[in-house]
Length: 218
Image 1 (cartoon, rainbow, N blue to C red):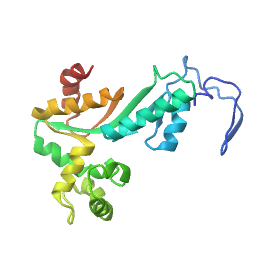
Image 2: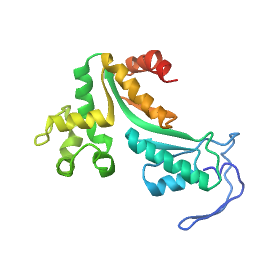
Image 3: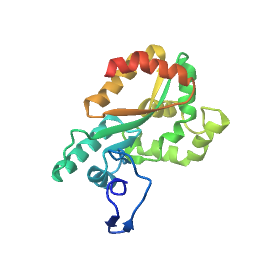
């Protein structure tokens, strides 16, 4: 993307992919567009550190995000690249409603889409046996969303709740201070942006973010 928007004709001689004399007419933006690379794992992080303007992580804990950030900053330093304007974004699901029970219901209902199959994420807070249990029930966990339920036969409610607490931002409005503290933990380790997925009550969520969250974390 960066080469195609800055160099004409564009050539790329990669190990797997090659481009010769690509001369697109559509790139007109000056400066060229900011390029994020979606990356959580080592190989993609190493590539993205050198080729992108920022890293778009997904559902990572503070500890895992810290490790990614430190690795990327190290790769950039080794390559002689400045990291002053480099950005780190972490995608997270937001369920903060007036009704805490509704918030937790929705978070559990959609928890399958928080990538429960990623062992490197899950084993921070579940045992090997619990992880295998979740994998064995993944079709039913995914099915909670269309079935409008937050329970799966054979999976303890406590385990689903733990996944919600570790992988999402969930609670009642009276718990917002704790959620803000969690966001500040991300800021402290170098996350520059958070991308939030809002399910229900989007206007309510945007209002909370504007009135209470942004002033607290800026």
